[in-house]
Length: 494
Image (cartoon, rainbow, N blue to C red; front, side, top):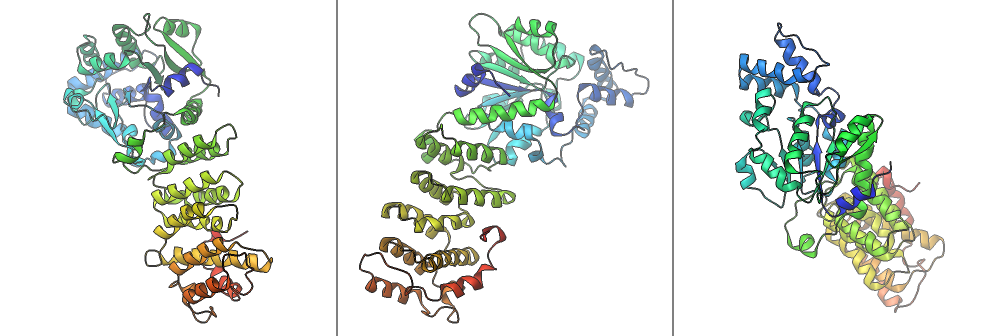
């Protein structure tokens, strides 16, 4: 899908405000009612009310009658039941996950459900829900703001859903209207999930006209619509709103994902203060962002510096969900094995240390055998392994690392390969840290019995020269054979 360059440029400048409609909620769960279904449900409870689905003007009247008969508390209670998302796994909503990665400081929604809030909570992304004047006065600008333009079910009096509610808002005195006017000055609005059968859309056009959207000097805004007619397109143009046409609702997901990918490449770099001085909460790595990062690192058009910045910006202190461990480990193995710039590999090691999961240090072991790496490079690699994988912290991981080191030594011994003395010194230095691992401390499988003794023998026999491994590890094959079956399946060599 091709996106307007102008829209991408506005996102890069953080000058776009997403405006989320009910069509986006149905992308998360088809059972969530739209305006028509919502109104029909209220009408069915009042047996004497005739509801004409094709008459949009009746929607608000039906709900108005319901409130007058049963009161606002019961109205909101029914809405909570109809819009319940308790059993919904938000990670199944590709649209919402993509939306979270857009570079926006705030977004608006006319929806009453809590899908946006659940999305932010799912990946530990800080947000603040804005509903009342008090919320506006107590804004925390370090969090993304979710502005509930038509209220929130936690505050029944804030809900804009009946005909009277809309008439009251037409006065344009509500704090939320004033806030929108301030936000829209110099910024573009991006409407997602709206249609011309939505009562909200007519109210929004009135609000936009009051704000001055479309007037000379105001930036263009955008709306994504399914097969709009010429009349709709021309009508929107008078408001300064450009139409992006799609053929079906599922294309809205593709639009959001493409927008997420493009803005990922162009996103504003974090400052040194933001990266190292501020207390940044741990973000959860989503499959979509991981996909974007993988593609970006493999992209020949991006420079090494750009790749490193994006790598650190994305991975430092993030949390990798357990269901992604296998894919993430395989990706690390791929980066380690391919002939990419060593600076990328070093920074990957640093990011892995920031992530703090010892499992991800295992693929780094092979870098210790890379003769093209300098001593300084190898210190950068060995430090994350040492800092996270001591036997007393995670014996299984430490045992796996020690076993992989021995297997690499065995390969070189069997192939009669040389290993530089400096590289060997790093390797044995690391093995000393794991000397209490079962694989190294078991006298039945280790002729040397103690890795310190082996290390001292190596130092005496190898005064900084290349040396074959025949005499260094005569029992490595037996050790590796016994521990191989204990390795996690995805770590075993194919």
